[in-house]
Image 1 (tube, rainbow, N blue to C red):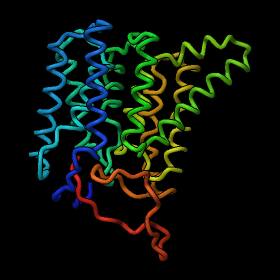
Image 2 (image 1 turned 30 degrees about the horizontal axis):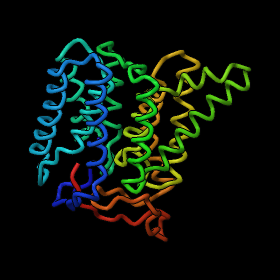
Image 3 (image 1 turned 120 degrees about the vertical axis):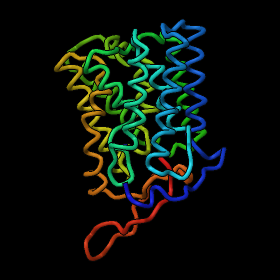
Image 4 (image 1 turned 90 degrees about the horizontal axis):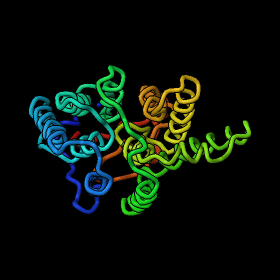
Length: 297
């Protein structure tokens, strides 16, 4: 969610260069703000179960697939995102969502990359079976604005290694919403209300921007963002289903291997964040010459 070299000794990211540390700090701040200021309806026990189950699943996967070391950061990001988005009345469902999210990283893989974003897949499964729901309006307008600032600051701090896909998706999605409103003569308050959602921003900055599930090249990521935005709007406006971006991402994720084939780029390494320049091409076959990487999931 593998090539043989994936399980070798990893390149350990330095503390200040690993973008996941800033993501964790941002998500933790949002969770604390939601719990103590917005009074999110999520029990502390559920948070502990979600975070603990995610780390346990990561540990089991590390041992089962013989990874060289246990790294809790990616699992913590996925589980914090689940705490922020998933609502359920059953602790077992929260634990199951964490298992699906983290387990998919080890099982659903293609050429050293996850097929689906872990949080996105877990949410899609829970919603499909009616085991939980997402409350997009829980943030309020003030919190939404503060979250927007935090996310933009996050992009600057992490040197925006994947800012292109986030900004491209928001441009396509928001632009098409406003274009539709203008075409139909609807008041602009309608698209404004549709984008005032903390869930949309979490999706944009922490799901679709996941380096392990997006195309390696910038061209591929921009095209991918367009596909996700179009699919999200189709689901939202044709089927009248909420959480369109979530369904758009889950539907378009299988296209990533094709986009990587059409627009090759450097495979992402957490130790060396990069926007993904095209690798050296093989003159005989017109395909990129593989570069062996050593990294953990």
